[in-house]
Image (cartoon, rainbow, N blue to C red; front, side, top):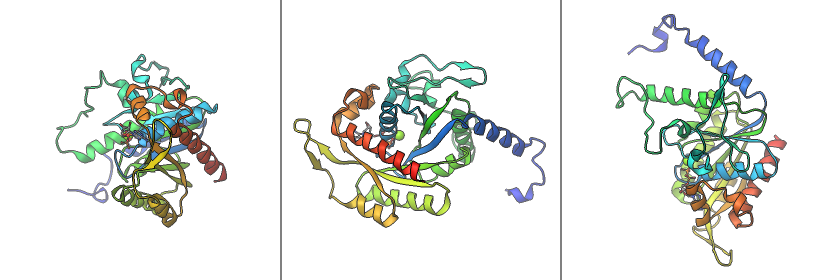
Amino acid sequence: MKTWHDIATDGGSDVAGQVAVQADRLAERLSDIRYIVAVMSGKGGVGKSTVAVNLAAALARNGARIGLVDGDINGPSLGRMTGVQATTPPQRTGGAVSPPETTLGVRVMSMALFLRDETTPVTWDAPSQSGGAAWRGLREAGALRELIADTAWGALDMLLVDLPPGSDRLPTLADVAPRIDAAVVVTIPSAVALDVVGRSVRMIQQHLDVSSLGLVENMASHACPHCGQADPLYPPGRTDRLARTLDVPVLARIPFDPVLGMAADEGHSYVYEHPDRPAACAFTELADQLKLLLDAS
Ligand SMILES: Nc1ncnc2c1ncn2[C@@H]1O[C@H](COP(=O)(O)OP(=O)(O)O)[C@@H](O)[C@H]1O
Ligand SMILES: [Mg+2]
């Protein structure tokens, strides 16, 4: 197999030129966006999308203009979780697609909005659906770039990007976006999750130019539906120990709340409908702490 060094030209396709044009279009589209923030974790199923949706809602509830991109191209979930899946498909006007908005005015863009229904899998035109991993990786990065660059976001105070699991996802976003102002890293306090999350944070600290980093501890406790008392679900102190070792703050702690899980499934806004529940207060705290972190950087 040839390496890049063996290939003298790109065969006339001007790949470098095409990438430069796309990068310019992206920079232009994002020029009115104050902060770009990734919500991520090395680990799957820890609540990244839940945190992204409810952080967006908590910020919007305080008057901020917020955009939310579903960075999970193959397993998009934000259409359902934000309730915008049920609205009409996004309309293209001029060169850009108008994003649908949630009850609180959060502008949402997700691959799910372009699929016929929730049973339709995402596939790529490729020589075959098996094999071709490098090809699929490129197509996914390209699709993420298009979701961000071809959306008419307008002026935003913050664009949140909900990334799928894997420590390679932030580098992909870093390739696609002109800058990443902060990474909100979600974990649960299981040793398995904390190991993976610790590695992801070290990778960011060592290899990426992300000025602000913070952890969110999800599902460390269960808020009693009757009295609101929080019962721990894991031995206490684990997330704090990792945070100290990594020298990053814990921005918020979100308790387990079945009402939050149901709201996600039904596409209702938990923060809007249940503002006084402990997890909704924790999302407000997260919004405040993130703003402080960004303003200090
Ligand atoms: N704090 C929480 N309380 C109750 N359910 C939660 C909480 N956080 C996440 N969930 C539920 O756990 C599941 C996984 O969450 P999700 O946000 O999709 O994770 P990820 O994006 O990391 O894969 C979802 O069904 C979600 O509703
Ligand atoms: Mg997710």
